[in-house]
Amino acid sequence: MSSVTAQKRSQTLVIVSTTLVVIWLILAAFPFLWTLWGSFKVQADFFSKADWTNALTGTFTEQATGSAFTGRAYYGAWVQEEFWLAAVNTVIVVFCVVVISLTLGTLGGYALARSGYRYAFWLLMVALVFRAMPHITLVSGYLLPFFEWNLWGHLPTSIIVLVAINQPFTLWMLHSFFLNIPKDLDESAMVDGCTRFEAFRHVIIPVMWPGVITTGLFSFLLAYNDFAVTAMLLSQDNQTMVPKVASFLGSTFEEGNVMFAVASVVSATAPLFVLVLFFQRQIVSGLTAGAVKG
Image (cartoon, rainbow, N blue to C red; front, side, top):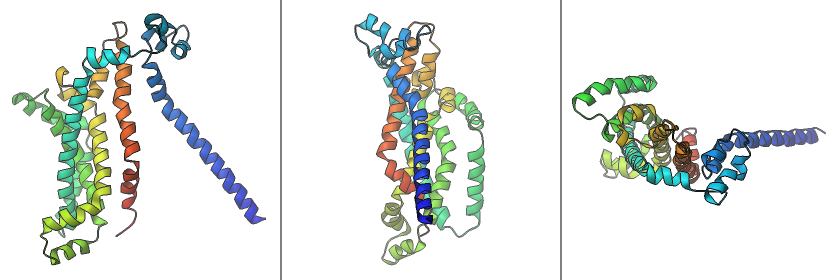
């Protein structure tokens, strides 16, 4: 009797949890799917005040283009408004931030994890304090030298600040991964003739790949999704994608321009879905690697 009751409870728990997950997925996915659908409509349909079903049927879109769907918004955003330049700037900024953050974080995290001195703990505490600081504090601190050296508005300014913001996180995260790698691996490699750096490169890093990939993905998301730093430090010509979307919203007084923002939102969000789907196994293995000691 007890086994039957336990089985019923288990089935009920599965049904409830599955239902909650499905509801959450619908609520989470609906805004993006609705925006994706609307990006192929004209403004009169997607922002129709008279009848919201116009966004589904494409009444005005068919009248204007002869089809229920149109790519005018993407053409206007990518070609007419040169959103592709913002995409190129985003790739440059994100690549530089991830590479620099991972390089410094990997070397620094390994050194602190293998250091027997107490100053390693205090360095991590200082890094934690800087990580907790509001981003605007670091931005305001960099503005004066950037203006004096005539660097404001260029991509290196945002790269420098984003690395400064991201570095404490990568240092802490990679440091925790290195602590879970036995020191015996380093010592065995050095007994076999490797130097400390060779042991780090050929023995430790291959074991660390899940942690490096996970940390790199979080660094990517920080640089890719940032608005405050890039909006303040980059000029209009050097904007990345997220500030560029906001600039489209500032030109809504012209008919159809708001659809450029809709198309650019979809264009900026789609790569994130692809990235997470492609690296989902590495993300899970990297986040759970620290749960098992040694």
